[in-house]
Image (cartoon, rainbow, N blue to C red):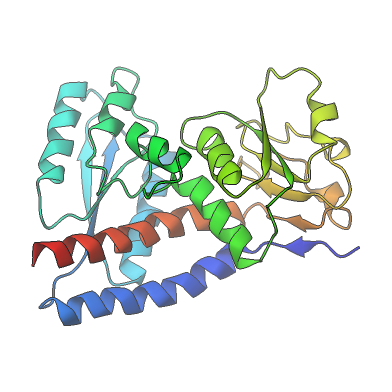
Length: 284
């Protein structure tokens, strides 16, 4: 059997061309106004700095502005909240990204939830999660929303399928489960402490690896013809799922790298452009 490769990089590139035209249209229609995403990086974690730079580069490719807000490692919760509030009230800023994780002394959840929901283009607020869970309009958490867009682009059927999500983080596993449920999948949420995980996975039509441990999910646990979505990335270019033995057995696979990762960044930018279109139109 030939396994379909769900090429997130290709879909992201195609979408960027469309977003470039949408940004150009904003500039033409609204007197040269340029949409802007604010990225906040607290501390000097090299991986976080790289991720922020990738997101800024994606903005540049579509003609969108970005401002980099860099704060020191010893930043307090109050200082970060003050910065977020200033961006909330800044009409030139249409989207806000607070890079995760922040240093341990900061109340990350409080800071996430202080972001204006209309500027929460990374989909990290509790309000946004609640609205998504209830099937209401909101910006979805970027990685699970990117996965849903990828499945849609390749016309992967979700309705009626048994989807097993391995991972329960508030910005990946939990919103992923709600999005699948909203598309009429039967959803099971598992995690690193789930008992009989191999037996549960053997019943899954769709497997989403989002547990944050390299190759935690073994290929032998996954049934033939399953759709395999790997949302992990670890040194050496491996994900949360043992993928290599599944080629030729799974019906579809997201490669690592090149599958979910590009769609995460693309979804952030996609939602930032949407926010810009809505906010600029309302302000004029």
